[in-house]
Image (cartoon, rainbow, N blue to C red; front, side):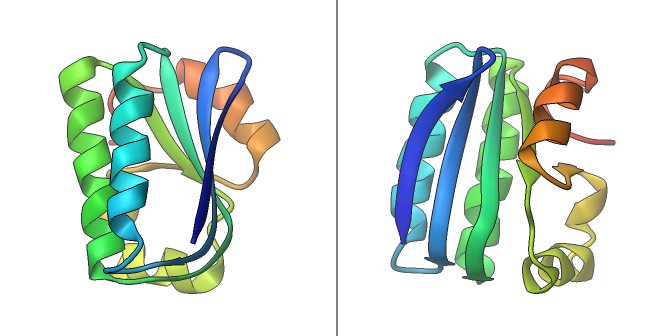
Length: 119
C-alpha cells in the first residue's frame, strides 16, 4: 500500500492506494495520527485507489474516528469502492463516518460536518 499526505483548502488528505490490511494498516495509522496531531481542522482519507480493506484496516479507520473526537477534528472518507463500502455497511459503520463520493464533495462539505465524524 502507498500512502501520501497532502493539504488542500487547509484540510489534510491522506491518499491511499493498494490494500489496507494487517500488513499495511500500521502505516495508515501512523499517517492518521500525524495528520490529526498537525492541527488541521479536518482530515480526509481518499480511498479511491483502495482495492481491499480488512478488519485491521477498518479498526485503523475507527481509531482515526476516535482520535478525531479527542482532537475535535472533522474526519471523513471519500472515494470508497463498492467492496470497501460493503464492509463498512456490514459493520454498520457507514452511519458513524462522514462518507463522501469524491474529493470535490468532501472538501466542499467537510467544513459543515460535525467535528469528529458522522451521526
